[in-house]
Length: 453
Image 1 (tube, rainbow, N blue to C red):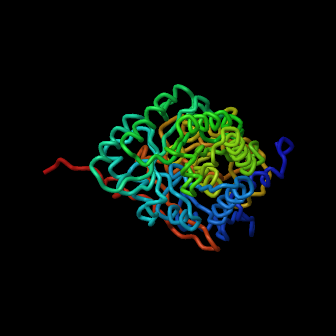
Image 2: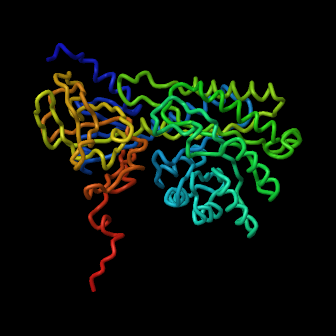
Image 3: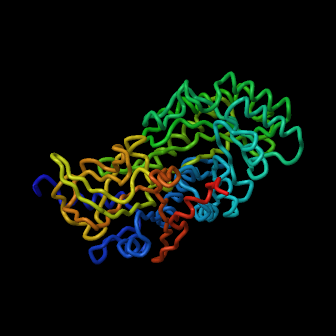
């Protein structure tokens, strides 16, 4: 079967791994650490995050914005991709804001010392309790709907400090991506229509709320920025029509803080060798920056503070999942590699049909000789991580590494079938730091209440 594959396939797959990945002594190393040794020490499933890749990812955004956008700009890390105190502390090394949805993410950011002015709260159905927490902890709230705004008006009238507000526009067009990750289409649950947003601006002015900007988001894991053009035009039209925020021209001309335009995030990454090359961050930024500048010049608007919210494109490639093959099953037309993780720690293949690749941890350069399906231990036929993947012969007990595992795995992980969520290691300077321990059965039972007397 060797003739059906090409030996350099492993080199292509290495392009998907973190930037610090090397093959040393016939073993995968990341961040100067031996993956086989880490799997032996910490067990599997095991998640690894590489500091070097994280640092370079955010610098790529900074370089592009500095080159393309002459006015002020900022970056918010989208915590929904993956967030814990360690990652939140890293954001502050780079002066990033942190986008939180829900009290757990807010708690993680606060535990890491993220200051109030850098904490932004999203959410499509914020309860009064959610909003109260946001008022206490956040510097900015993105208002999704008129009901939420009415709740905020009541809270504002009660007195006390109040965060800045951005209004979320429903632009009416999504980016090209999976239907489940599109957010900008007309019948989406997210954001406000133009008429709703007009009413929201009126209410903000009537009740003297600190309205600072507009936000929209059209979807996640897209590669073509073209659909953002129409949404930017719509947002700028609304800013012009409504002088958003009030006295926009006079305020900016007097040297005050500029209004804010946030076209969200969602720029894609390559998950499989067939997806390479990686989507170009600089091309994405150049498109957005050019459209904003041209649109403002056409309308006589001062340039806004441009604020982007990348998550996946910062953190996905930095993460690697390591599993142990427990069972190899041969079926007519299929070879199954059954590993010790899957649906419970990575639901993306089941949710979105996400396509991954893998390499053996030991002797990763072995040429592929077979096609395999990699599946987990859970009681679902949909618990399949990868299908029809060219691989070398894999023996029971071997470890495999799946790259691009840093986003939307652990943030959506579950305890299905009583699974205990995996530990996370932070790799930096040749050392592995445990930033999240493996769950225990005691953790699993901690929230249960016994009715026995």
